[in-house]
Image (cartoon, rainbow, N blue to C red; front, side):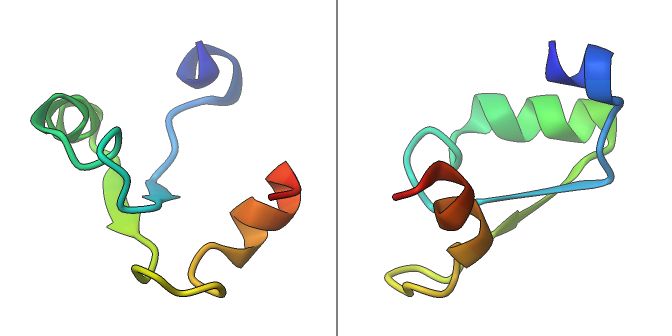
Length: 56
């Protein structure tokens, strides 16, 4: 749904959680030509923008 309303991104950045490191997501993103980057593990600043947006 996000791709349909916002367009296909060139890149997404996620944390290293199990939801984001699986083969299913990897295959999906490759199929759409989206580069997948990860935040720095165990770093409070690695995901600062996302965490601020989510207020976590």
